[in-house]
Image (cartoon, rainbow, N blue to C red; front, top):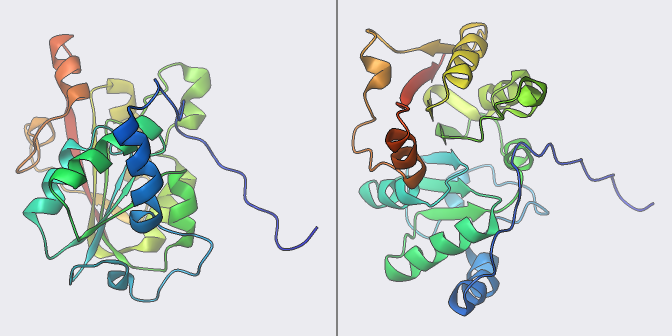
Length: 231
């Protein structure tokens, strides 16, 4: 066998494909992902800001951006910050590419695979923030080991986040919120920034909402919005 053995994906996500893409979506995946997508076969740059067409002063990561509502909005609100969006679900990535055709973001790069592959590729202390909004809750107890928040991924977060960087987590599943609070409370690299019970039920500043969140509200579930700081 030539070369090092490829690392096995940890697969914290479910399916990666949905219904057949429209021709425009399929064409954009073929044409734009080679330009906007990150190539992990090459070493990560020491200065992550060099990845972006725009001049940026810091880099944030959103894991599992879904329909892309927040990532597209946030990258437009902060043109001086670089954003990396991770989404392994092909249909969601295609939707983001359509949005970028209408409103380009020169400060945005994309990755369409397991986020842990990207985290292991990134250099130390390179990120100004990480967002994880409404991840797959894996509600059955036997599947909790597949939740993205765990000891291994938190070690990765701690390595790639700058001191003072924020990790933001949102979910409408109480067991996952409790799970996340427990894991972050027990980790020496993070501190929870909530000052009152109302804090974690108040959406983030500029929060646009998501389709998943709207569905949760219709079904009577409230979102929790947690913020932790890298010490």
